Length: 252
Image 1 (spheres, one colour):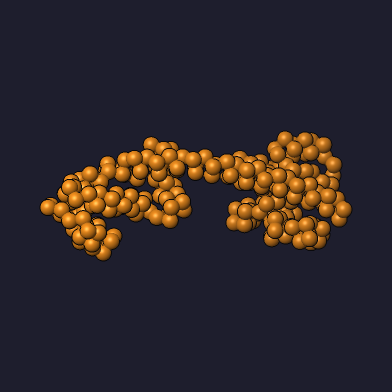
Image 2 (cartoon, rainbow, N blue to C red):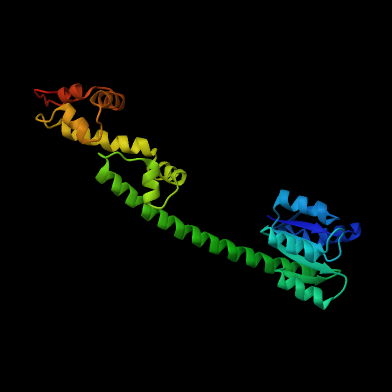
């Protein structure tokens, strides 16, 4: 449902506008009605409506001033100005400030329906454009992230820090971290450990390579720490893994 906020200082006018603009069949719901600009601004900031329909003459500021305030503060919503008079200078100003339309009171049911249909077309086009941009950004991010994975596979034995890695490939650390979880099902640290442990298993099959040599080669300068990580990952020590796989060495 697209949310509508109505603003008019005359109670009967608010009730009438609610009747013609509350069209759930078209996807619109009136979520608030206000009689002053001060209360209206609080409501708009709180509810973030999709549409604001306001009379030109409201207490504290005009509907045009309200529209200008919303634009200057980058509050995203479509604004429709209504007035009891066809005041040409107001029509020009409203459109210049970015109003969606300017209507003369009372707004008939047919006119309201046509207006809401035009609005919905605009919303749907905007959503399609946003979706297309999101897909393009996702594709770009996916391509860049695949380059990150390739880099790690080629440099897993080096000292790699997520913050530096993210900066090198144009990501923020938090976004890069979330991509790891979303794309691999693992954190960055878990992914790096997985690569190192897989390589350790491959190297342990060579009986001529010492555990210390393997540890240093895959990125662990501290052999004791490598033992701890390996045992936590596989449930056995490197030597036990080697023995289990029938690859004993003189320096296990």
